[in-house]
Image 1 (cartoon, one colour):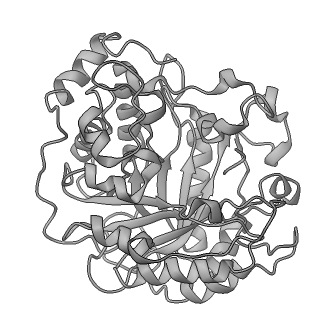
Image 2 (tube, one colour):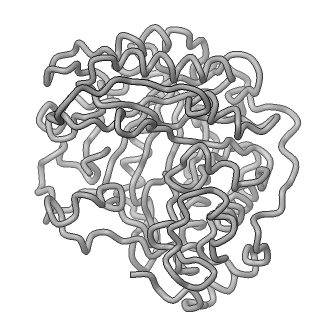
Length: 417
């Protein structure tokens, strides 16, 4: 959903913080690498065609002072997805939905599960399964991190700036609480054979609110700069390794998706070293070239998709792929009004298919036309004309989704059917 002050890094060393520190702060230069599981997960092959091809849904928690009581469906999250929305995605051929889900746990203390949000998540998972879709639970916000970080550029317009919370990158307590939320999510989906993975954090980004080794704002926008400058307290490598170990301790088989920092940028996967636990899937997001993918509706001139040389998506992937470790294109998409959007989608999908990479396009819409008109840039169903189901993206996505042959219950996974 694209409707779009650092704390003391040495503070907050409370009991929970000390536990987190003992578990993870011993490594200054990243997590200690461990061997990847020798037997690939049936949903995440590293050779041959990918198994999972689908789409992303992105939601945020309702704020009455911002959204009122009914906008986006009237539920605890918006937009609300109904059974018919998941059915439509499956009927289009997809076998995967990535649920970029908000605030399973509260943003502010006391950090704990929000039962209303958990109920919505389970309802959505059940609806997706009934439609014949696998689900990835991708944790979008929670302790120390609000939904509004994804809409930072719109602060002060349709929402007040104080709703942006991003203290997690300098707060050990909040990092520990986030880990507890991930463990809780793993337990929540235990025994389900329709779960394709748990994404520990959607687009981790310590650059904006994290610190460098001098306690200053990090702002490390190149991989080598990140490795050289990031502080221990803000280092996503250390944080994610600690979380992954805790999740793996309660779930032996759940695929754990970990994205690199810098908004999950593909080139930043080079900073992550090897997976911290067995069963990791690296998850990258790609919106390059950004001037193209985010081309404004009424911008002057015509934006044309163009990649070449070492700047192609395929080149970026080939530079970071790790032998035996699945790589997932967890989000990609472009403004629906672009004239050659079909060329863009074909290029991305072809690169993934040739590299055994599962993929998910951003964003599958709801049936709520009023909401969709407010958040329409990446609606893969609409064409250039608002509300008209004649999208060039769909014309490419549907034949690609038609290659799907596996749905929940049809592969040898543990858990109830």
